[in-house]
Image: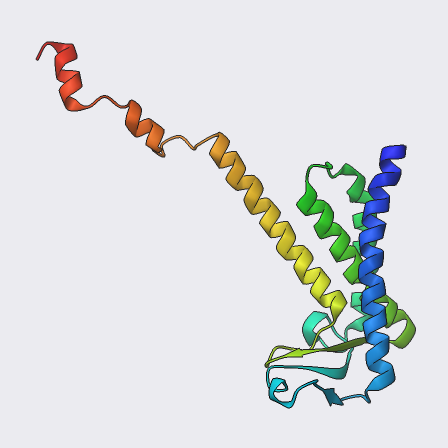
Length: 187
């Protein structure tokens, strides 16, 4: 039982940090910028990165506008699935544990907006990329951490158990050369 509590403490703790940062930054934007207003600390930076107050009734990065209700339900389902699945994740699988915490925090951060406002507040604008927020970033970083973890796990397995039919340097060193095989056959 104690292990389960610590497991959930990690998950909820990481998600809570993401949610708090997400909600705090969104509230700063809502209080200080009118809808559509742009702010940048330096004029020269504005074409590349800026803060803009934006409403998003769709998915992350502004796709599928008007489908907020579906994404609200999806966020609830994802959060429940993470809570149910998380205790089964081995503690040594750090990438999956971190990825799930980041994704839970991002999903709940945007869910709070949908429940309280009917839309998500986006504000980070970089180049021509769609406007996004901390929750969107957290979900995306969680996916990247998960992919990196899977790649590292696969790479370690290949190092332990090289595939058959693929020669390694060790295989080449062990193979007898033609001159050594002639001496063995009396040639």
